Length: 496
Ligand code: MN
Image (cartoon, rainbow, N blue to C red):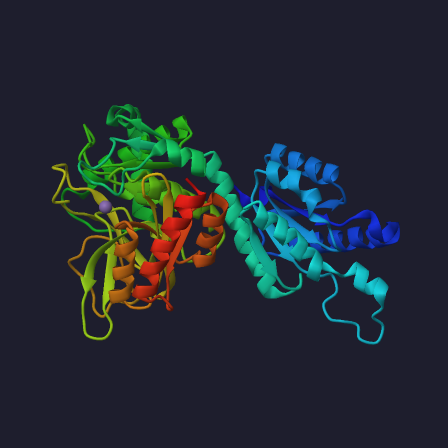
């Protein structure tokens, strides 16, 4: 898994020669201080590097070229300390291929009432310098995040921290190879899509592999390695005892080791499989996929490569945060007067990063696929805020749908349910949430996260240049339907 702290965010400050060298010296000093301050924030994982003051079209263009060339640079923060005439940014903004955050801040926090003079005013004029830059970026339809606030303000810092994590997730996608093992669950629609279009839009590639390609790696696993991993299972989880458990654990361990070898060998950081194309594998990978997700791999069941890629990206974003992120499926409802809820789960593949309490290792029949009983980790999930995010291909363009939810503790034990599960109360309520989700075409598969929230997905959609629709406390169905229609017109006019 990539270490985000090895990446760099560049802080570039816009100014001009008009104010003389003395002012420019102060501008540079202030910018360097702000870069250092941001770099010192624990919440901002990448390094924040001061990259100078740009004052001309030549300097902005050179900066953009350098940023494109530097692989460690995952995004740029622009700050207009003084007025920075924005025509000088045109060529740079046309050239730049990295995510942008426009930090609309000011070195000085409060107005120095008794001493303020015109020199102070000329030096501290981001209030209008930032607007000039904003006009240019908007005219050029350049996607970016705008953060407004003093640079020492906790909220400003947090918004930059979120964006920097998303930039890392975005950067990771540019190098993500998704292995689609065994293609798609037959006749299923939402897991399909245009893989060429996806690579152009998001950077990740998706290529198909036969189950034989995986089986070769599984066959190559040694008995000693299997024994070691079975011991790790027993040490890490509460293994439910039974006659056939040991051989099931051995088969599962062999599959996990084979999958790790296949993924490492091919340089894959995300994959899909499907229970309909398992070839000679003895079980549908359950515990293997659960543990691979916990290590940062993206996964989508039944050939769902979009969710697999999104999950990997989210795993990069959430590095070091608590709460966890998993592949998820809306499984069954708890309809009741007043407050209906969703029980989310999958046949097997829920990531233990979201687990609370004991994680049990169990062996049960699957009921579909006709294979031997797969090993899986079974657990519950703590209460707390979370999101479900779904990326769909509408044929020619993508839509990202996010529903804010509250995970809640189940009313009772679920002694007979042999899968990991989470109960949630969607915002604003299940009736409106499911109505609008369905109207938006949201999939049954999602990325479920307690670590990253809606703002991450908003920043992601901005970087990718795709539509985002959010279902939250404020959502009303009639307004939402209109928004979908307006967006359809917008994307038809401007993005196709
Ligand atoms: Mn599914």
